[in-house]
Image 1: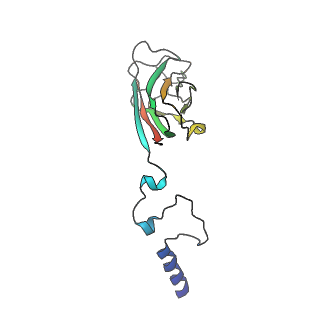
Image 2: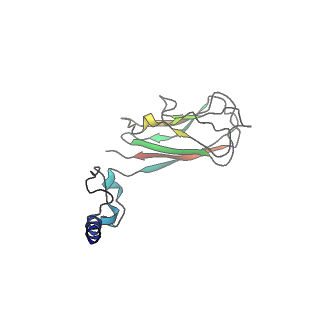
Image 3: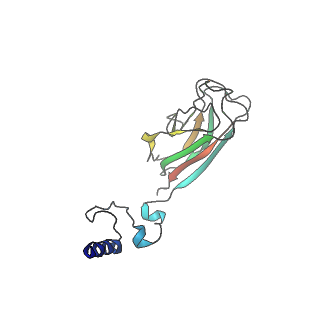
Length: 166
């Protein structure tokens, strides 16, 4: 029993959890040893959230497009959190208001068609675009779904996340 306690103390001192044969990933950091969370630069960059918000105005129509922000060149896309947290985007459920967010070339580059008929709807990130790094600035656009005119006063809001490049 004493032998196991000594082995445990040695592993704890080395900052290991589980088996001693586990291989570390390249950006692996050990909170037990370091005592502090790693800096973003230790994990190959910092994440920059870009706030986007659009309030629907009179005259916006089905399949219309709205400019939201700019994706700076050499910045890698790493996620998004977009929602209709205050008002539904459609007059009633089941209308099929499914907007997408893109880069002007590919309509759903950042966000796949997501059902925004109800309050609290959340957008689906386009997993194929994670890490997308354009060589020139790209305008980020919101394109309304093919059915249902968006409700005036409805708000689409959230963040797109990027890792700045060189």
